Image (cartoon, rainbow, N blue to C red; front, side, top):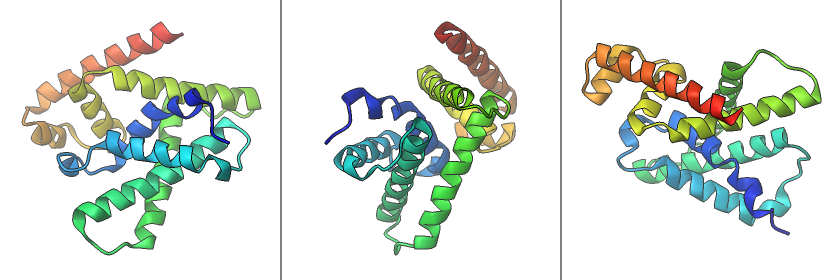
Length: 184
């Protein structure tokens, strides 16, 4: 049995954001986050019969595990280093932590099943909205808000002044808010 076509596809932006968060920006010339996401979704589709969850949160956790393995394998293949199981486990934890930070960025703690379902939908909406931003705005927001890079570090990475990066982030946040309001 395979999943409905759109069931896994709705997680593409979310997984893409997580892949960008955990792939060292200096490796992006060699390893593309979208390739990692595509490989992860392919594996999820091929192994759908192994999914034992019952809701969106469990599905997201299962997909994060697949993404963590795909990221670890891609980095390993690029670096040609021996596979380190401890690194893979820490990568899975880091992905789960990023997902938690992403959800916390949207709303305060929610407890009822309907509130958790809404938070999951909001997380997917945020990932979709981020995907629509110009690449430099998206990257600057991700580096500042999820990687905790300073404006100076982001400026060095992009070859821009910290002031220019601040403007980039401000425009990105403004556009992100507009996109999220449009989807409401």
